[in-house]
Structure formats: C-alpha cells, structure tokens
Image (tube, rainbow, N blue to C red; front, top):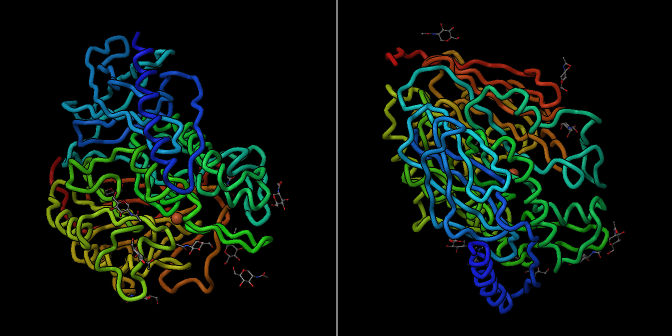
Length: 499
Ligand SMILES: *[C@@H]1O[C@H](CO)[C@@H](O)[C@H](O)[C@H]1NC(C)=O
Ligand SMILES: *[C@@H]1O[C@H](CO)[C@@H](O)[C@H](O)[C@H]1NC(C)=O
Ligand SMILES: *[C@@H]1O[C@H](CO)[C@@H](O)[C@H](O)[C@H]1NC(C)=O
Ligand SMILES: *[C@@H]1O[C@H](CO)[C@@H](O)[C@H](O)[C@H]1NC(C)=O
Ligand SMILES: *[C@@H]1O[C@H](CO)[C@@H](O)[C@H](O)[C@H]1NC(C)=O
Ligand SMILES: *[C@@H]1O[C@H](CO)[C@@H](O)[C@H](O)[C@H]1NC(C)=O
Ligand SMILES: *[C@@H]1O[C@H](CO)[C@@H](O)[C@H](O)[C@H]1NC(C)=O
Ligand SMILES: *[C@@H]1O[C@H](CO)[C@@H](O)[C@H](O)[C@H]1NC(C)=O
Ligand SMILES: *[C@@H]1O[C@H](CO)[C@@H](O)[C@H](O)[C@H]1NC(C)=O
Ligand SMILES: [Fe+2]
C-alpha cells in the first residue's frame, strides 16, 4: 500500500518537472528511473551542533516521510526522527532525503537505521564534541576528490590527462578508511568531478555521447562517486563546501581542440547549473551558525571553531573592476546572498563572536588559495584575508590546485618572521592532491619565496592533529601507502584553560 502511494507520488512529482523542462532549452528527454524502489544509498552524515546530526540518503523514489531509527545500542533503536524532505531536481535520477536528528548527547556513539532499508543495515555515528572540550583529536581533509574507478581516476588515462593510479595503489578513499582515526572528513569543494564527463569524452576516455544526452553521463558519474563515498560518509560526518566543479555541467568550459569547439555553460541541462545538485544533496549546519545553505557556515568541535567559506560566488567587496563576474571562471552561478557583502559580513560576525577560551583554535577552509606557487585567487584574498588576519585565524586550508603546498604564516603577501613558532599571521596550506580524473597539477616555477614544502608527485590527504590549545600538527598523508610525507607543527603561545 505504502509502495503504491509512493509510486503515485513519484509520478506526480516527476511529471511537472518534465513539463517545466520541456518548455526550457535545451530540453530534457524522458527519464527512466531504475526500479530499485526505496532502498537507501549514498548515506551521509553532517554535524548539526554537538547535539544534532543531519542524516541524508538517496532513493530512486521519493519518500513521504524519511525516517531514521536510532539508539544507544544496535538492538535498541528506540528513538526515531523524520522529516518531509525528499527532494529532487530536473535530470536527477534520485531523491535526496534529509533528516535532522536533534537532542542527542554530545560525543556519544549512536546506532541508526534508515527506514526503507531492505537489508536492515545498522550503522553508527559519533556526535560532535562540545565547544570547550580540550580532549586531543584528529580530523581528515580532502579537496578535489573525484570519482575513482573505470570512469574516473584509474590505472589508465585519457589523451591529455596524467598520473594514473599504479596497479594496486591504495586510493585516497581506501587510505582514509585504513587510517580512520579521525573524527570527521572536511571536503571544501570539488566533489565527484561529474562535470568532467565531456572532457573525458573529448579525450577519448569515455565513449561519445551527444551533448543533448550528456546529462545522463553527468548524473551517472555523480552517483557513482556518492556511492563509493558512502562507506566513509555513513559512519563519519562529511562536511562539505562549494568548489568550481559543483557549479555546472562542464566546469565552465570544455574545449574540443580537434573540432575547434568550446562548449560553455549554455549546453548544460536545467538542474545541472548554479550548484543545483550540491544544494539538494547536502545539508550543512548553516541554521546553527547563521550561514547560508552549504555555501558558508561554521561549527565548533572540541577546542576548534571551524569556518567553511565560499570562494566560488558571493565574493562581495572582493570583486572589483574587471574581476566582477558572476562567480569565478565562467561558472555563471550565484550570487546566493541577498545582498552583495552578505557572506563577508557573516564571516566578520562569526569570527568576532568566537570564544577563544572555549575554542582556542580557529581553522577556516575555502576552495581556492591565494598563497600557492600556482595561479592564485586575487578576489578571494581581497574578500577574506583582512578578516582572517584581523581575527587571528590560526590556519586556512584550500585546494583547487592539484598539488600539496605548505607555506609560511602570511599576511598581505608577507611571511611572519616567527614562522610556526607563535606567529601572529594565519598559516596557509593548499592540498588539492586527493585525486581525480586528470591527475596532479604543476607548480608555477620558481616556487614562491614564502613556500616551505611542496609535492605534486603523489595523491594525498591532510590530517590535522589538535594536541592541546597550543600545538596543532598538519600532516600530508600519501594515499598510496599511508606514510606522512610532510609534518609541521604550529605553536601558539597561549595558556590552556582547563577542560
Ligand atoms: C568521438 O567522436 C569524434 C567525432 O565527433 C571522433 O573523432 C572520435 O574518434 C570519437 N571518439 C570515440 C572514443 O568514439
Ligand atoms: C576556431 O573557431 C574560431 C571561432 O569560433 C575561429 O575564429 C577560428 O578561426 C577557428 N580556428 C580554426 C583553426 O578553425
Ligand atoms: C556560449 O557559447 C555559444 C556558442 O559558441 C556563444 O554563442 C555564447 O555567447 C557563449 N555564452 C557564454 C556565456 O559564454
Ligand atoms: C552577470 O550576470 C548578469 C545577469 O545575470 C549579466 O547581465 C551580466 O552580463 C553577467 N556578467 C558577466 C561579466 O558575465
Ligand atoms: C543561482 O541561484 C540563486 C539563488 O537560488 C539565484 O539568486 C541566482 O540568480 C542564480 N544564478 C544564476 C546565474 O542563475
Ligand atoms: C599579493 O600578490 C599578488 C600577486 O602578485 C597580487 O595580485 C595581490 O594583489 C597581492 N595582494 C596584496 C594584499 O598585496
Ligand atoms: C609538478 O610541477 C612541476 C613544476 O611545474 C612540473 O614540471 C611537473 O610536470 C609537475 N608534475 C605533475 C605530475 O604535474
Ligand atoms: C601540547 O602538546 C604538545 C605536543 O604533544 C606537547 O609537546 C606540549 O607539552 C603540550 N602542552 C601542554 C600545555 O599540554
Ligand atoms: C610511500 O609513498 C610515497 C609517495 O609515493 C613515497 O615517496 C614513499 O617512498 C613511500 N614510502 C614507503 C615506506 O613505501
Ligand atoms: Fe577546483
């Protein structure tokens, strides 16, 4: 009965989309949904304060009332939380279900099960640490992590791509699992690289599809990636931010040199522009932090205040003169704020109100860097750096360039003479080496004078180890074998208040 109701609902939901997109250009042909009914997949978690958790998953059909059963023991899932949020968008093959569980105990393991799971799989998560908890812990950070496997990063590459996996090489996803002693995964942008479908086709890596039918390839790559992340994200929170590859269906522009064609955002189907998939797929704690959707938000976890900022749109006062575009690099996305400087004003308010006795560490992450031996994002520097310096942010993380580089603590292009020994300036690290279809990127030589270490020879992720209020270690972990290729410890000369 329930199945029948939902099927009727599914048809009811899908038909209007087809009607809408039929009148738009380009038109979306009929979508045939696979008949896997309501089986949950692509399970993902995100903190919602230290007493809440967003639980999200996808289904091929909409759910009337997405529900999570949970409890302290696997055989006693006595509590339940539900919502009416089962959302999709044109071209999507799936529905994104979101439930926010509230009223949980902090730093506590819960077991949970999604209603509709035919296998009855019981999973677990641990809630966030309260602000002020001074227990040491680690987190993992990846940027620019794309689909791994035959249609993404694999042991072969297309004509123009590089750095295939070596046979048997441990991938970043496997490495994160093998070295899983971290609380949550932070992923500030470039998630899946589904927008590389056309590039992969042009490079002869994937069979040709017509541009008109390409949206299916895009969706397929996206879903494959979310599927493979699920082993991690169903047990650890996955905190995400926007990158350029979330913005539209072809990363702004795909060039076919053989036929002298530059494809731009106008080829994208409705639903594959303006961060639509990214907005539907994730739920980040912006309600808790006054932020905006998955674009900018903050959260506390133990002795750290984390800030996710958006380098892709809404650069506000960072955009002057010829830089004033709609989003960066042909993304033709955003703005999402209601006024020009909404993000920047939010950021100042957020940083101003941090209680450094509770959360002595402040770590910010945004997709694009401005201290790296590679092309930099100047509007990003104008928009964000003055606030990071003013409010003594300890560490700023980014990616976008597909390499690893650790630089000195910096302000206004000048390195802090104290280096890592109690600097006044924020420390900057770029690590876009997580791995995706077209491999690793090049440094622009000579390396910048403020560069302290760099690698573009192996895939890797970042581990942050918060020892106490004065010592924070950053490690660049080689995905291939788990070894730490670079370790540096930031010392801040502050008194550690009691836990
Ligand atoms: C894709 O089509 C182009 C012509 O449009 C052709 O040159 C190319 O060889 C084809 N590639 C594959 C993998 O079929
Ligand atoms: C490529 O196309 C551009 C315009 O789209 C044209 O100006 C140029 O001459 C073409 N180049 C070749 C080699 O055909
Ligand atoms: C996209 O490409 C088409 C065809 O080449 C061109 O007419 C249009 O101006 C381009 N649009 C943008 C936003 O670049
Ligand atoms: C930005 O978008 C507006 C409308 O959305 C458009 O009129 C304008 O030309 C765009 N600016 C650039 C530089 O593309
Ligand atoms: C993207 O979406 C936002 C809000 O949903 C909207 O205000 C903005 O105009 C859109 N931008 C483009 C380029 O469509
Ligand atoms: C830092 O250097 C870059 C590259 O030379 C430049 O574009 C930028 O304006 C400089 N920023 C500041 C704040 O001086
Ligand atoms: C790493 O950067 C150097 C310097 O630009 C470049 O020569 C090399 O090709 C890059 N390696 C990869 C794998 O991109
Ligand atoms: C903080 O941790 C570092 C690294 O483990 C250690 O050397 C230092 O003594 C600790 N400081 C305090 C105040 O506990
Ligand atoms: C681990 O991998 C890195 C990067 O590929 C390599 O430089 C290093 O020698 C390897 N270490 C061991 C112990 O195999
Ligand atoms: Fe990027």
